[in-house]
Image 1 (cartoon, rainbow, N blue to C red):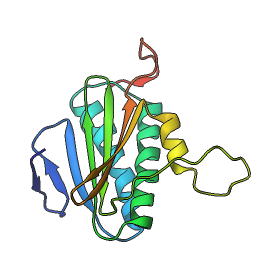
Image 2: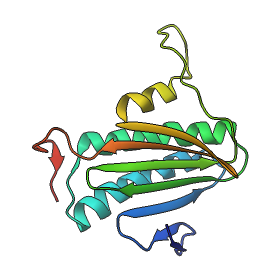
Image 3: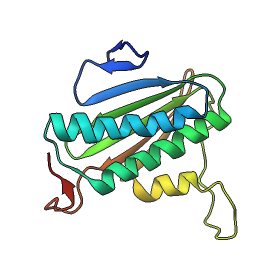
Amino acid sequence: MESVTSGDGRLAPLCPTEVTATLGGADLCIAEARDLVADFLGGRIRTELGIRVSARALGDAQLVVSELVTNARKYAPGPVSLELRVTRDAVEVAVRDTDPVLPVARSADAHRIGQHGLEIVKAVALTFEARREPTGKCLTARIALRDGLDGRDALAP
């Protein structure tokens, strides 16, 4: 996706259904990533373009972004890239970092404290993919925009 730098240093989209941002190294970047999801899905996609987005989809996308960005900040040195793209029926969340090691979901264990992030992502996503790239890895999750076939839970513009 092509993009241009906006005044605040974030990357602004050239296509209205995609946005990419490079996140800084501070813990604050996790909150900024969640805010970007809310602005993108709740603002541009729902309000400006009139695409129906359920409250569940917005919450799940923020949760997935939070989990993936948290792990990227924790395990990978260097920059983290976040890309959001709306397709016909889903939002694709892609997080890129500099660590080439692919994550492995651990088996469910109610007594384990922590390290449930990938389990959570896989539980709420339609699909999840982890792939190595020349500079690290990319983790991509697809989340349905609407609930059910009638979209009754969708937040109308």
